[in-house]
Image (cartoon, rainbow, N blue to C red):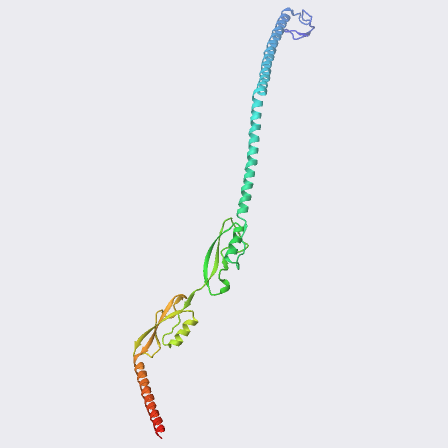
Amino acid sequence: MIICPNCKTENEDDAKFCKNCGYYFLEENNKQDNNKKENKKKDKAKHKTKTKNKTKVKKEKAKAPKNKQYNDKPKSSIFTKILLLFFILLSIGLLIIASILGYNYYEENNIEVPNVIGYSYEEATAILDTANLSYEMKEVETTNQDEVGIVIKQSKKGGSKTHENAVITLTVGVLDNHVTVPNVVGLTLEEATSTLNKNNISYRIEYEETTDEENNTVIKQSIRAGKKIENTEIITITVARNTNNNSDNNNETNNEETDNNETDESSNQDQEKNLQN
């Protein structure tokens, strides 16, 4: 359809004149043809530039994946796989080491302490050696013969848990050799020696001449009463020897001798008389 530019009437495509006003369409057709041609040229040029740009973009896009496919991807994927494998193996190794160390720590710190009270020291130490435990001895004096050389106490309770080579202190009974010194001053020599013998105390006797104390009476002792000493220590007791009593005893013995002599003489005289008769 050709629209008349003069009266705006629609005419056929092949009309040369407007059927309404008689306008000549040749120039208009030429213009429209020229415009159409120009528009077609422009459209072709645009289409070419678009297709060129598209092909360039496609080529660039196509090239980029090829480079990544053959260069970057294989290298990066192998490297990441190696790193991942390394970290997995490292984690497994660390886990194994931690479990071994934990087990050893548990074993070393989970040793049960045996009860050795009532055993001899030699038997107790043998039991502790078997349990991988160390020990030390502490002596305590006792008067009970049944406790001598026997473990009567241990530092860690039997059945408790401890670590390997822990030191267990064993308290062992040792016979008490100490005795308490009695007071024997004022006793007779016989009474004093009997008292010292009962207390298992060794003694030595010394005599001292005096006129004030009673004869054969203990007037001194070398170790004070109440002190504890070893039963091997010797105590010295000093016994009084009264000189006055000795003189009286001597006079009495002399008188007895004179009396005996007189009786002997009288008897002899009687015997002579009897012979004469």
